[in-house]
Image 1 (cartoon, rainbow, N blue to C red):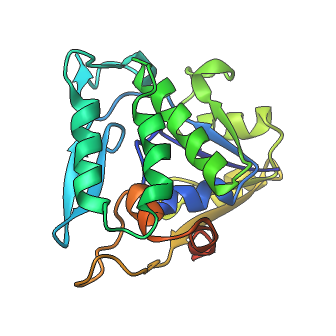
Image 2 (tube, rainbow, N blue to C red):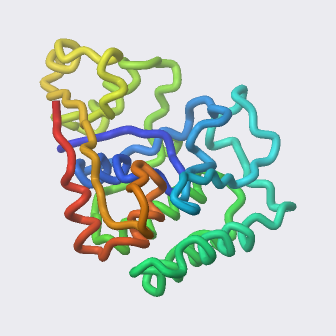
Length: 232
């Protein structure tokens, strides 16, 4: 069984979905410290040929809290504002009529907890794309917060009986092939290749939110782009 572990990200870039599709079980690491100005509650859309940041407002967010302890600020009228931004930005995109209703359902999901909200968004997008990977929030099962870093990852692999763990390439210096091999677990790192596709004219802007990928590509085309990676 192949496993990956990532923090829950809002409408993440295509590399996140490449990793998710490459494994059997994908653990949402939601019982670790929240990171200010990270990708948990924000990402980039395409606007006039450039990346434009959008953000879901949070209530009393702090790096002293776990991700699963963070709530969305429901006092702010951000849902309609973000949907309007998506409308204005992508109404001329080829898949707009198909994808916008999916995004609208995701964004209007009546949930305050950011981790649960993101879990629902990932489930909805996976359903749309036909991705069958099992999603598991780490806070619901493993009870190993006393462990840190590599040892905690290893413990999750062992609890899930995984024999193959794939990590984003950015963590290459953090994990030891030898340590994983001690438990008969193969360790690989995924490196996303530049997945280009036609946008609305101009130079291609890479690594935007999955929203951009969905708007400009059919389901079949997205699934081909999800294969654009190598394992090291």
